Length: 542
Image 1 (cartoon, helix red, strand yellow):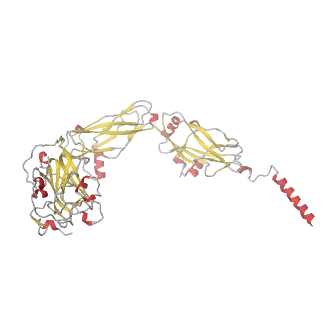
Image 2 (cartoon, helix red, strand yellow):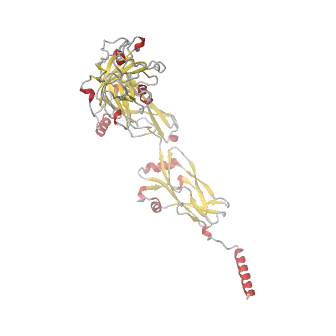
């Protein structure tokens, strides 16, 4: 019995050995030994200039399968119109036209040698020949639909077809940015650089020039109707427009638009539509219109930089416990730091000297220990240089508690110089609340009903204010009413816009003395009951 089992085992082993050594045995059918596919199969957009005669590119063919070490071969076949519809989603063969054989070249046979896993197949197209087909079929896609086939290898179903879509065009010019542009003519004139892009620049083989047509009233009417505006056509006397010079092969070009106040009214808004002209242009032009919105404001302003600003006087603020709530922070350009009055501190008594002699000099700011209420709170800011004040901005901080928006009414004064003496140096106690002694302040602006919301709120210096009165190196800030009690007030930031021109004429600081202006009024102060006589406006409850 044991002998028979042993003999049977030997026979089975011999059979297995013979089977394993049989060279004809293969785990994969011959057709699956190699599998070919096109890397990045699908649709490829090809854009070229019309004057280009030849472009060489390549397709990457991948080889995989059960035995990719052997050689594999295949070829490309052009799909029929019906096959192209089915493969690439066209509804009808009327939607496209295929290029002919003289417009491209491909190798007849693709061979990937033994041991290689891929092959770059070079092919060539002739854009200048395809261009004529493009012009003859402006409403159709110009395509080359290809299928990868093989008699010996399997072709991957997800990588077997390729569609080339050709866009062959003449070089053409278009706006680099066709968005509307707003231009203020601050002085007598200004200029604007206009930028253009050259599409298919490689096809532009010679220098050329393109002019821009403008002041088309029909285009202005279209714009006004579409946007609900009533802009006037910019008069021809108000602008000069240079042509776009386009060097051969250049991809960009620029031109200068010169704008003047000649022929326009102050504060009136005008529209200048710009469109490339086909006349005299050797390249194609975009149909897009670029609109320039132009105005010459009566009053022109610019932001005053805060780099050299500093607070030189602050007579009521949080100091030691809350350093981010001192008067100094209104110049730090941080909306999240905010000046807060010393609302819960002990009120200063009449004639009491609470000047901080120890720290004022080291901080370059006159500082005080006790509380003052509206309208005795005063902050003085040095601007670094004389400024002609045009607008003043007040920022209320983005805090989530409701009492950081208490400033309601506020006076702003301009001064060309500033001095202050504490009582020990001969100064008066009353001056602690006004900063009037030795200074000439000009009231230039009263901001009333400053919103209780978060944000920056701008107020314009009244038109009749003289340049001399507007000019100052120092601004005095004096709150005159709050939305709640007189002891509570805040401001996050102070901003100033300088008046730089009136009707296009430059404005320079006037350092002469203006007409006399009454100094800051002195409030009636009753230290016994800690009350300012403000009237009902100072005590609005919210």
